[in-house]
Image (cartoon, rainbow, N blue to C red; front, side, top):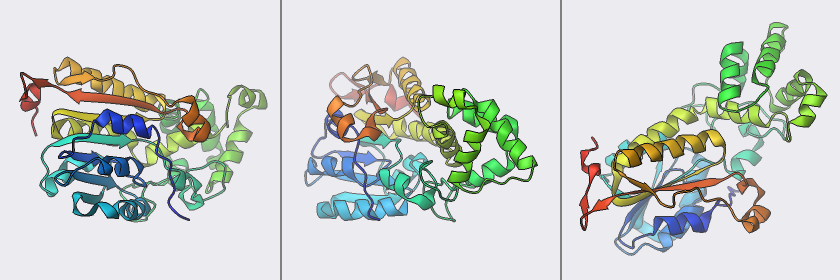
Length: 317
């Protein structure tokens, strides 16, 4: 299956970067290269683009899409949490813009063996790079087989924001204690439907397994720590006047990004510009329903007194 993914908030992202022809830009979650292509189109002969992704299929697809831009493009296979050291490895100390899109690609959702979708029966894997030698130490299957009620409740409540977190966690562990072993996405969906009474499922306003699958994916890929580490690195490599754009898809991620941007503002590193998150238009949602929950936030580092950098100079590198 070809790697297909419709870039969310594409125009808003590229406009937000305000690409300089001779600038250096990073897409830390490259995917199929949709945002990257539009950035590269705006670069001049002295501009540079670096794309980072941990998924081998994404790297291959983006490489093919961006090959026409020649040597100005560098693609690195890595988790975006390691953006700063990866940039240092290729001699890049400062960049003018960074894009981080936290969404799961349509390709990943539609590739059954990845185990991301509750609509297709497949092994419960959920590792983003889809390989046995990947950085993720656990699969979703192993989490369900080994974690305690307390730990499962924690991820279902905090990562999935599921009001039925404890009930589902207790049901999974009880099923396990009775000899049940959940190996596939279909088995997990069936078990959740069994655990939750029908009236509760009707009130949920969506598929009863949706938030549990989200929680497991976040836990398997250590997404919360990865985002924190990526933001730590991003602010240290942004040049004065540089911009970081983050697109999130659920409230937990968006709160993390918003709070971090506010913290940077309090430290006099710059400001959110625009102040509020941008969301897809009705037209975009109609053409790409998966974009409906997206929120885009922009932070711009400050330039002071005609180009003299402010507190950015005080950030340890």
